[in-house]
Length: 338
Ligand code: KG4
Image 1 (cartoon, rainbow, N blue to C red):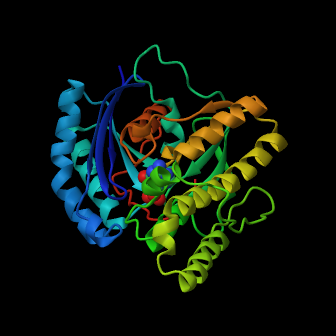
Image 2 (cartoon, rainbow, N blue to C red; image 1 turned 90 degrees about the vertical axis):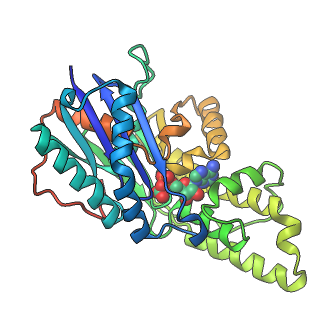
């Protein structure tokens, strides 16, 4: 029996999960509320909160799983990318616990784990995992990538943003409309009541499968600037239409490159991962593509789209089978590509 404890502390969620023989037994997340009033994550406050949360969160994950720490086979932790102070808390904790229990430690790339979240099994009979090779659209606050997934360990980034990430485009445009942070979920909610054809925004024409969102963001800002000169209540009067137009344009951009990649590589198995995959418009676009192009799509449950430790434990489980352990002097890394 292989029992893996996963620990995630890359940004502002302290999380721990237990996976036994590939099946999820517990998945605990403590989200830090302290950042809300600052309009974004404050790194120093995030690491302090991780420090307070990590022991109770791990404790709860073990209790919920009905597992003693002596039963653990290995400890998987997020080594990067992320905020350095936050990563240090999870990494140090993993080192302490693995050394005390004398069990191996497995370092996990957070982005890699987002992709492998599709393999989390909630029960033994859960057999809906993607088949290799498949394409994964990874869209979050910090990344927008198209990844060709050839196996659990072999992933190739075939397209990525050259400037802002899709989540950043949602968040920054939401911020100028006064919708708070993170704005993505608010835009999603308001977009349902708006007309997506009301405003035309710039769409990039990128070669290959890369993305760019900075031109779209600028065209959104210019639209607001010009209209606000004519009517100071423009945003209030058009909030839903602005959100609908913004969301539809971001989704169009994301799907166009993904469609191109799927066609060129003749791949019909397509997955989505990362925080922005919670977006209802993007989920509908995937379903629409499944019908129109015969894609077999994989959309994770909401709990596995944002940062979580289940995906870290799952990745750890695969790495454990390949005996890919890490040394005690492993240091976290803040930036990385897969
Ligand atoms: O993967 P994630 O939790 O962590 C980061 O990489 O930061 O992604 C967070 C991002 C934020 O930009 C947030 O606005 C976006 O995901 N997001 C959404 C939705 N839910 C979260 N964007 C659009 N629609 C949503 N429903």
